[in-house]
Length: 126
Image 1 (cartoon, one colour):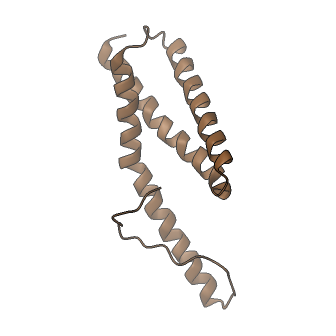
Image 2 (spheres, one colour; image 1 turned 90 degrees about the vertical axis):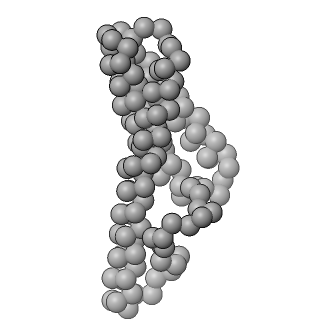
Image 3 (cartoon, one colour; image 1 turned 30 degrees about the vertical axis):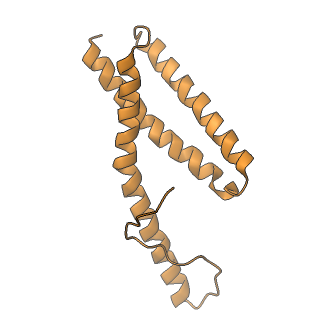
């Protein structure tokens, strides 16, 4: 397999890794106050992602790891973070705000946090 195709496979796998990280983040989010759960979640993500990488490497018979493999994985993860992650976060905030409005109109007494701001904050972090 030519090196450029291998690089594209690594980018796709990095993109998949971003999606996989999102799943692990959502599963551990209810336990965000427990540091141990976050650490276990991150370790499980690394194990599953490494397994996916090894599985794809064996399936496609990729050569031994090269530096550009790591660059492709990092670039794919960065693409996920800068594109679909932000898009999903935007629509999740819109959905949350719409749900809060609907419940408030029905007169339901709900305990929820403030409506989510859709404006980009300078100090916002995940």
